[in-house]
Amino acid sequence: MARRRQLYEGKAKILFEGPEPGTLVQYFKDDATAGNGAKKGVITGKGVLNNRISEHLMMRLGEIGVPTHFVRRLNMREQLIREVEIIPLEIVVRNVAAGSLSKRLGIPEGTRLPRSIIEYYYKNDGLGDPMVAEEHITAFGWASTVDLDDMVALTLRINDFLSGLFLGIGITLVDFKLEFGRLWENEDMRLVLADEISPDNCRLWDAKTSEKLDKDRFRRDMGRVEEAYQEVARRLGILPEA
Ligand code: C5P
Image 1: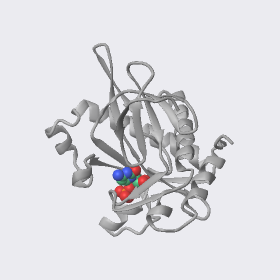
Image 2 (image 1 turned 120 degrees about the horizontal axis):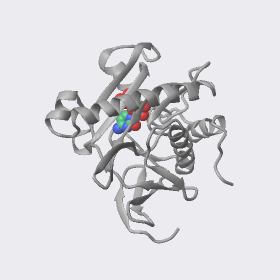
Image 3 (image 1 turned 180 degrees about the vertical axis):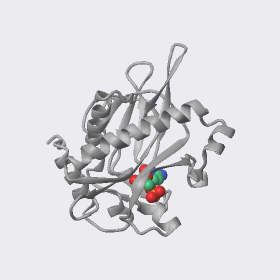
Image 4 (image 1 turned 90 degrees about the horizontal axis):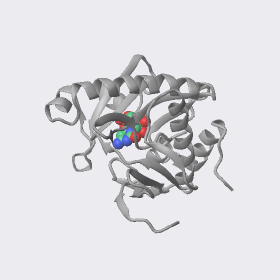
């Protein structure tokens, strides 16, 4: 790997300066955390798999006209992305009750929701990513009403498309988390999908058996974590380079 200036290290990824202005290199680590860093571990090979899975899903989304930060995959653990100004929100979409929704509202895991639910969380590790309402987002200037409307429209489109894509390979898309960024081109600003889409930030259940094929296997000490990520990659028809 060529020596590049490191700009930011997160829990699962590192961002390096890119080869051209306006680009970054996103490096996928094997490190895994849960509970806002309370639980730490390594899932061997996860970075390689997430790089491939996220590449595949971002490219498919690009094909239907969803703008993303993804440019191209560089190697097994790195991809070239457009540099964006990250909006400090985590947008969670839920199709089936699970995780924090089940815990908070007492709705049993696996209950199909009457309609998809979107939740917003303020992206702030120090505060533990608290849930916020639209009012907080606009009042504190994290995003304008127009930007929020655009993000919701894109999020619903992404949810419909990915739900169908996963169902086609026998997987239920239970819920997932998205992040968006602002891309400036001269005076114009476009919102683009950023970060990654992988079993680290999606709940993916086998459609027949409800077997978990995502990071909950790590969060809940269920074992066979890497195998689950591999199974998702296998069903998507992509496998890591030898
Ligand atoms: O924990 P919770 O049920 O709120 O998670 C909902 C979805 O958002 C899950 O798919 C989880 O993987 C994802 N998520 C995430 N990063 C967070 C919190 C949740 O990717 N910080």
